Image 1 (cartoon, rainbow, N blue to C red):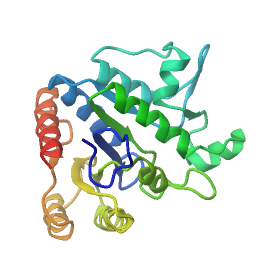
Image 2: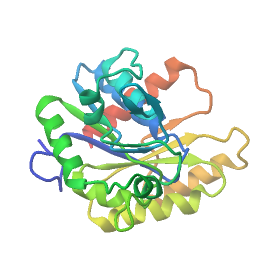
Image 3: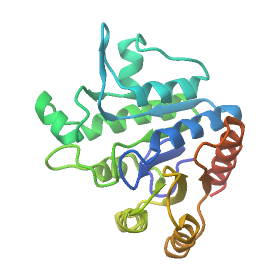
Image 4: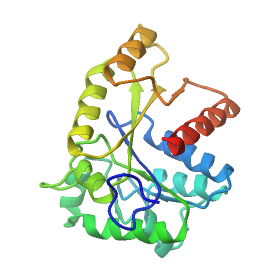
Length: 244
């Protein structure tokens, strides 16, 4: 069964975006993939567009995409993964760690959202649950005309927002969630991810976000949580996403 508002053939799953870059999207996405696998599901993962990659004999490889693959398969994944398998996860991979629209323009490439959506549909037919991680924030540009939000629209999955708990997150979180709701996509909820161990008034910020975003976070990951605690939090997050 596809989520509300999904295009025909869309997978059950989630689109993970964030309030900014470096807020923990890959951390949360890999945690969700591992949680789904622990529930006995066949998990598909995608990092459709990535800027920042290493050259290998088989082509460019992005660390986030490799981490997603490893979490979904429950095994280590090295950069030598075959080109076809890697392409299904990360069809647009660029070397320089810059904004995707700049990296794509420098490579002479315009990301094809229809191609990405087609790959997602193929995964929907093969696997039980799909985790798609965006690049940067919700409005990060991927070309001169398109943004991550356009990719989210094409996939039609519920959107999970990772809020990096640091100074500035109040504004970023509200603007991100507001634009997702305006797009008509289902907002699956939000996750509080502690990325600044020295953040002042963290609890006060969390209380305001709870009030302004319509409810508490579906999960809260503490800075430096032990692996077992992270796994338990991810399991609860996955279960709440599936129920909602």
